[in-house]
Length: 438
Image 1 (spheres, helix red, strand yellow):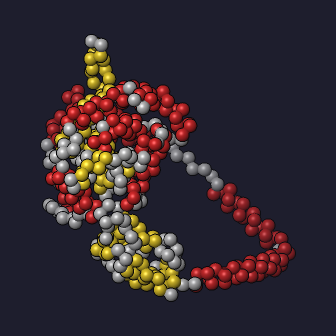
Image 2 (tube, rainbow, N blue to C red; image 1 turned 180 degrees about the vertical axis):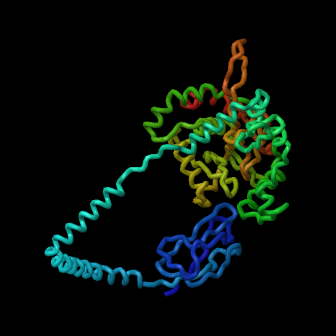
Image 3 (tube, rainbow, N blue to C red; image 1 turned 90 degrees about the vertical axis):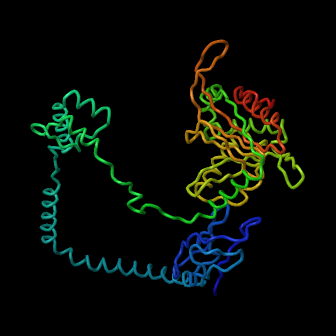
């Protein structure tokens, strides 16, 4: 019986996909629920599993082909031979075991009378074993000889040569000394520093330029980002937040938090909580424009950007206002792992009302994040740097992070945007407020 491999329903508004790669070849045996082919959509990659046990007999779409939802990718010839073979093997193993045991007994019985032969053989075996069992002792090590040779070379260095080696991190083993007895001179080091570097390996491998077709995910990212710039009246406001109190709170409670919930207390849970409080106080930032209407969202689905090998994806943390700190951290880790492993579904990416982007993990000091349509606001986090700050007329060192809020000026006034960011700042600088919901 032949089973067709169909393109499954991919999600709302998605009607086609690209065949990324076949995970099985024609003629391969396939088990039920085993992945056969990987499809690439505008938002996620997904694997199509087999519905039956059998053999892949036909492949209708090649890698890179665009296929519609419901179209036939190939077919599997369902077989029952696997089950029959298993049934046949079981009795054969039992019979063979019985016969082998009897045969071994019969073969061993006449050898009882050859005691002298056996004893001599065993003595010879013992002798050979004792001779082979002598341990090997390493008296000299190459590593020590190398170290000693390096020390001898360093002793020949002049002060100027030592200074150049230390400042430029030069590997002296690769330097051919031109002085007496192979002594390295200052001119030898200058010659090495003047040598032109080799061309990059990528240039050697791929040539001066290389053209690679954009993946569907990368095309969608480019399209949506350009759409956000063209459609929204985007503006960015900045502020800075003193992270010292949050850092101290994490240090004091990290061990107890981890023992109780089995997960580390990170920064993201504080930012999610602070943003939810701000969104409740300023509903326009949690709204979106549809035609000539403004839709105010009374639920808080926080999107957060995750960088993967295939591009940036923005999964959603649903009903964040109803989650505890531990729930937020667990959900963020779970969804992030799915994103990096390419296991996200369409539902994981839909329904967000506000986005948080953390460029600080890559060392970004300041940026202007781009909106994630149709959302009207995105908060940019950045790296934490110790800076001098004036507190009570005294200069103190505090852990400071710059915040950036990009927003759609068509429905969000500057007053609301600045007030929202200031509210987030106040809740982060005094995290106790987050537990009082003020």
